Length: 163
Image (cartoon, rainbow, N blue to C red):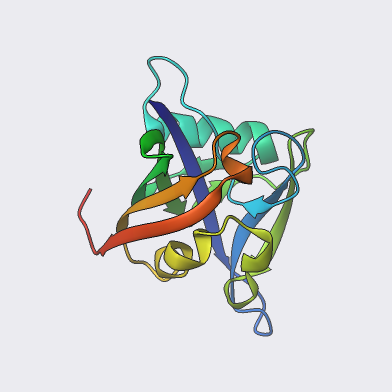
């Protein structure tokens, strides 16, 4: 089973924008051209928290601290577990977001998250995560690899879970 992470740094923006979340536009790989949080695949022996810290540093140059686990998402493809994604959020980071070969970072007002340019399931769980809730979810896709071309066919969510 593939273990992955997502990390959502949050900050208070201007009075006009309100709270902001750091999103990336993926430049290559799974989900290329779509928006999401920084993250990626866990390496052997690496905890999900360590992976989220490493991937955020590699993709956008931010050093994130005090990560709070906000979700655990299981993705099924044609009935089999494809991956489990550990979702983190934080308000504690140093550095300025910088583009890389893999990602173009952008601070986005929480109210303006571009769900139409994200995975089909993101609009179901990400608003709650950005508002401070925790979630365990299962998302079902059909149609074979790659996952980003499969059809989203169903989901189950449990809110306010402890990690």
